[in-house]
Image (cartoon, rainbow, N blue to C red; front, side, top):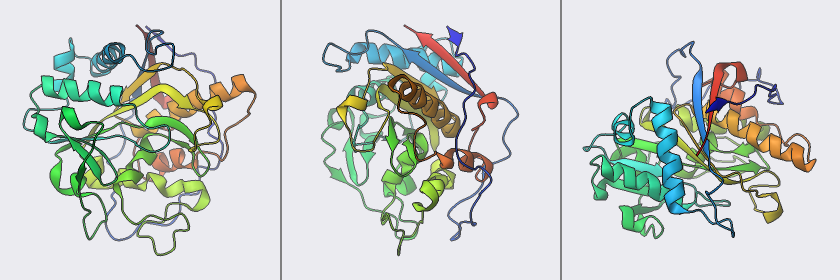
Length: 314
């Protein structure tokens, strides 16, 4: 186990433009951030994928277990999960089903551990947008539909159903926001978004999607989200979100944190390092929403010097 070499990581784009205040009273800045560094744990395994780049479920489970034990500081897997969840919780696992979707093997590994700590099967919801699966057996079917809060336009899974949330995105480059990982993943719980932002409740598409991070500042999301777990098995480094297979690569990783900004900052570096290998240059457009999430909404750390990245290989 060792820390990643600290090569300078530059988030291109201005962090000074903070934008207008968000109205309607749906957002609130977090408490003043701790001076301590935000930790992100990355676990990789050469055995994570088979010859066809399909995830091996038992290896994915081991990777997730190792990451959460290291991140939590607890002595074993059960204690690590019990640090964040209790049997009485109703847990929403927010995956991504769009291009380069969260792999079901990662979601299933999470659900197995929630069951192990006593969360009831019927109290585990795996979903994106309005399609949800209830329990372990419905991770991939997602045949239940949930409506949206009429005032906030947020899924009732978040506003009414769940006591706890887990943010489980993949990693991809994105033509509007530069990257799409943890901060952008909550777009999938909001109704009525449209790219021109005309008549939209939340204007998030201007200035390269700088305000896309706003959903993470909603108390109903910020206060309930207990973990960020990123599927980094096969990230997309270019031309996303549409998937061109030539820009997918076998990174064979799982990342864990509680800081979505630090998580996305690390993932931006992962994408950039692959782009450098392929001679693609800096990813475009710049991921302005990372610094915006830090400086305006106080959601976490976007400065590399304030992030502790711990790497493990199993």
